[in-house]
Length: 122
Length: 183
Image 1: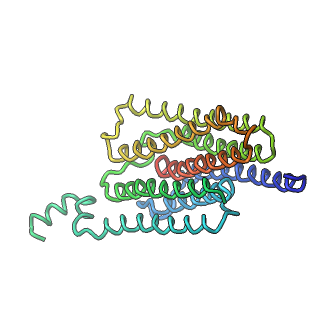
Image 2: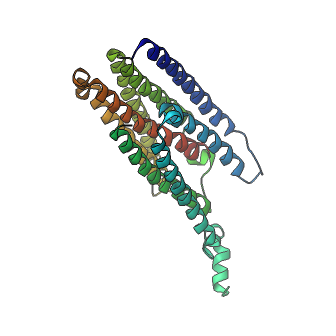
Image 3: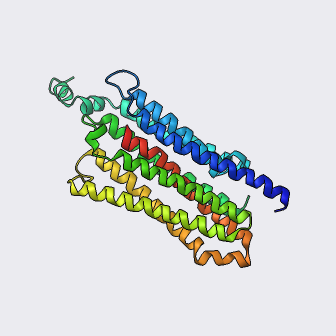
């Protein structure tokens, strides 16, 4: 590594420190917003969304800079894009299967109603 | 692009699916549970969880600095940063151990509630990954570091690969912390 490369590399190191500070700030932010209620009164959807957005931003910083994904080879991107597709499919299929099973949703959230439906032959 | 890097990324891809399966289980258990635990009902200590998150994030910067030190041909700083990374991993595990002990002391086991079943499964699997990363980093800090004299570039690549795994473990915790402690 010559003098020019060393100077360029030291710039990277300053970048790593910036990411580290951003991650710590985002962690404090995650905790702070968890004390605020977002969305409808009896729903957790707003808070889940906000927390997952912050977590995704933090994950992007770690993957992008600490794991060098901002300047990685194309073959690695292809590999990760494929993984992303399978990951989304895994989550989506699990959730879809939950809402697609006749009666199972009622049985889990309203056990008594589901029991009565069975008793009355519905 | 060297072979070990392709190898670790393929391995991390399989890890994404492993944790993905458990995250989807978490979603399924949560939306299907008529009495899910929220907030203080979980008896989880948010300040301790926040502290451990900061510990893992700090260990990620020391890990990347260990690799950067090798790139800059500063072996002493490499030893310092990688040693700190292993120590911070140990701090994380000790704190997690105290958290587990506290849960067990209060009669909270995986069988106590669906939430604790997925909590112990996810954090337990994550802790095993922390242990694995610590073992690898400890080797590269100790006997593995002798390679610096014979093949410095190869050691630098090994540290980068070990770092990719370590950052992934940090990345998983970034999602586990809000999902289990805050939501």
